[in-house]
Amino acid sequence: MEKQIINTTNAPAPIGPYNQSVKTGNLLFVSGQIPLDPVSNELVKSGIQDETHQVMKNLQAILTEAGASFKNVVKTTIFLTDMNNFAQVNEVYGSYFTGDYPARETVQVSGLPKGVDVEISVIATL
Image 1 (cartoon, rainbow, N blue to C red):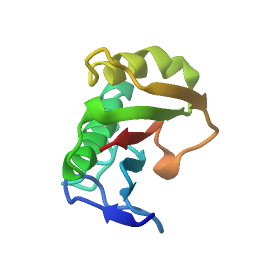
Image 2 (cartoon, rainbow, N blue to C red; image 1 turned 180 degrees about the horizontal axis):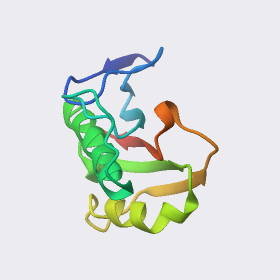
Image 3 (tube, helix red, strand yellow; image 1 turned 90 degrees about the vertical axis):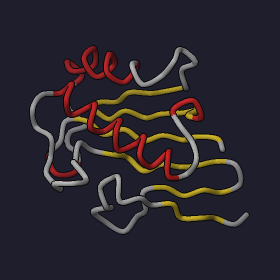
Image 4 (cartoon, rainbow, N blue to C red; image 1 turned 30 degrees about the vertical axis):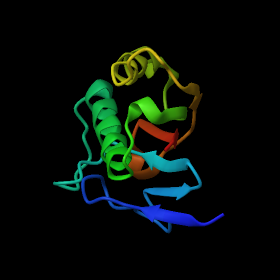
């Protein structure tokens, strides 16, 4: 099965040897996004809720570039450096979906790129 690379300038450029997303068949695999503002290239550091909103906006930009939306998301993975932030992240995350929620796991990790507190990746159908 062929794969198609999908990137957008409306989300942060990759900071390593990967792409923002890869489409294969009717599936879209979106790399983990961190709270990096694509315009200023600065990290959002004004609290976990603002950070999570930026992550979701970055994901949304990539989904849009691929012709999808959060309605197409079937699986997400949330990485947190502190599980005490779970409720606040969950509240923001949930506001981007309309009730038909995807499958998900949330895990606490010891560190994330650029020292951020949250990273989220998604898989969507097209």
